[in-house]
Each structure stands twice: as C-alpha cells, then as structure tokens.
Image 1 (spheres, rainbow, N blue to C red):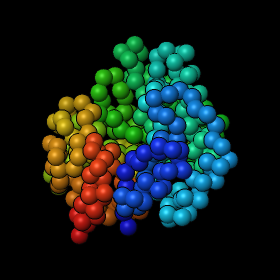
Image 2 (image 1 turned 30 degrees about the vertical axis):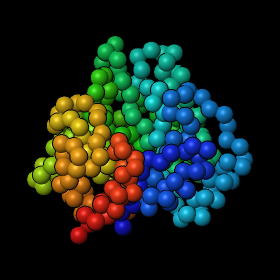
Image 3 (image 1 turned 90 degrees about the vertical axis):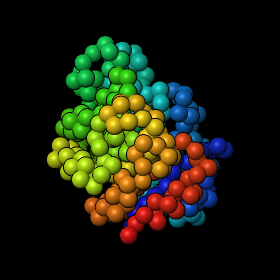
Length: 280
C-alpha cells in the first residue's frame, strides 16, 4: 500500500486539513500548522485540537500518514545569530504545535548559508538547532528534505543530508523526505530505469533508506542539474512520467507517504488517481 496525497489548505483552521484531503481522495496529506510566512502564531484552542483529532478519526487518517511542513521564513543554518535564534524559536513553536495535535513528523528545509559562511558551518548550525529542538520536544521526528540547491541552500547533495544525520544525537528522531523535483534539479537523474536505480542506490549507500519517511512528488520546470527549484504538474515538466512509474512500483517504498506539491492544486485529485494507476 502506498499512501498518496497532497499538501492541503488549512483555511478556517488546521482542523479543515483532513476534510480537504478527503475531498480529493488523498490517503495521506501535508499541511502547515501555522501561517508559513509568519514567525509566530496564536496558540491552538482546545476546540481546534479536539476538532482536528476528531476529523482525523472521522476521515480515517493515521498520524503516520501526515507530514506537516515548517514555515518558509525559518533558516536553521543562518550565519546571523539573531536570525538563527529567531528561526529556532519559530521552528520549536511549530514542533510543539505538531505534538499538541498528536502529529509525529515535521518536514523542514535544512537551511542556507547566504554566502557568508561555508556549507560545513551552515550544516553545523542546522545540527545544533535540531539537537536543541529534539531536547525541547517529546516525540516528534524531524524530517529533513533534500533541496534543489537554489541560491545558497544546503541539502542538494546526499552527503549534506548524511552529515546532518551524523550530527544528530538521537537518530530515532531524524528522517528524510526526498523531493523528486529537487532531486532532479540538484543533478540526480531519475528519468530512466538505470539512472533511477543508480540514484536510489546511491542515496541508500550515502544516507540509508532506513531514514526515508516520505517523498514529495513533483515534476520539474527546469533541467537536470539546473539547481533551480520550480515545481510542475506531473507529466507537464521536463522529467515526464517515467520517474513516477519507477517510484510507484518500487517495492522498497511500500507504506511510504507520497505528497504532491505540484503547482496547480485543481489537478491534485486527478494526479492522485494517476499515480495509483501507475502501480502494476
């Protein structure tokens, strides 16, 4: 069983996410637990928490099939001490909100050096931030997402992901999400069967498939190794449909979460059906 869904809206509150996921036939979903373009948010009311949990039960979603995403302002690797501390504070707030909702994952982009420190120093900042967040939370697993390498972002090499994991004290609290667009744009080809196997085997060798918790499923507007992060709807970008056939039929990824972040959300219901149709 593969659990396919999308990053759904939370207009009206986080309790609406399970409803919106159900409407498009999603077996899994992602959401923001607060406004992704703000540093802080009001605390959840007891009613919001209760309604969210009741809707999960009503529509049949296990917390294992939900992948919250952190806000876009957060940069755990920032070279600026004040901005890094602000990022950690916001990140920790989101993690605690997830735990209030009973959620067990928080997906995040690793961070950016902004051209002011080395990649190694940026990664060290990320490691320190994560170890602090793990210490300050109870049970949540932090799921690091690979990046396209746009601008000064780290995480575009599997080695970066490996180094982050290696620095985490409690490795039961760290996981990985592979974004197909980011993977391709960062230079790892998955468009032929041979290249797909080569890339997945390389990830296993460098990072370890045991850490893989989810995929973000996206086509790419830009080419292999472009290091430009531009998502596209499935089959409408440069990658085509072959990579998604390979992923959907990969027996190593049973019970995995597959979350659409394609640009036209009106196609998500159709794309979920399309992905299931690719399974032999």
